Length: 409
Ligand code: PGA
Ligand code: ZN
Image (tube, rainbow, N blue to C red; front, side, top):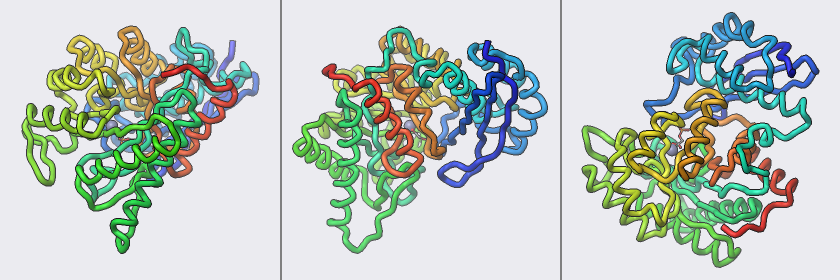
């Protein structure tokens, strides 16, 4: 048994300079590991609370006084019992006493310490049945930012390079190339305007949605020609952020729900979009289903705020055929056990999973292991900045360690 000997939680900062939590778990064998939790900006209404009302300091007090004593002596190899202890001590449905970020840091640090003790990579400890570490996720790379991640840009939150090569090194290369071409083109078209980057490393420019999509699709086409790697446009609309009183309010147009479904379906066909996240409001299960019926054969339709990694919300989405994919963010739901429950439901129903970062990240690499261990269809982790690169570089290492795969997509 891999008994937990000591647990430490402390404040650290995320990539936006906001306070978050890291945990360190030490096992009796001496194996120990540390993990930090990220934070979102466009958080879904159905996520657990990242922190209790008093913020990070309240979380630290509660965890140190009440949760840590309950974790000591537990078996780090029994993730389910560690995670259920976190829930039991918290005692609320939305983890609002200890906070989802404490839960994530503790849960992941426990799994990492256990993996170290066993001398195995983290992905192996998390591996779902049938996962052998030789199948790698596509890359969902944020290239141009708007919405809450880049005030002054387009209303759509993320313009994405969806790079879908079986070899992760090639997918990463292609996504980075699309990002670079967009930067060069923006500079070329607006030579006197300073170019900024958003929270996830994508470019920020005061351009409209359609112009941004044109930049993106041209950069993808150029990259396909140059590198012969399959890379196509993707979007995360984060539509709940501009949904008000039944309408989708863009700077230049207001659309009702059927109007939004038709508008997005047209964008999918016009620009060859293959990755489409949160195109509708987080309560719009039925309109999501209409859109998936219309375009789901040509693109992943991914629920982020719609599901908030929550197993009951995903069940509802499966019953209604709302999407063909679900975004997976550990701290939306709290613990690894909750996360794996959602992953397993998705797997059993043929719903693709996309393992995702948050816009405020920590410079750690464990997310790449979650993606590989859960057999994710894609890894969404941004393209630039040390906190994003930590995950991409880890995926590269995992690709090299197993010799990659030659399976065709
Ligand atoms: P968040 O958003 O991390 O700011 O919540 C990212 C996303 O919407 O995918
Ligand atoms: Zn999203």
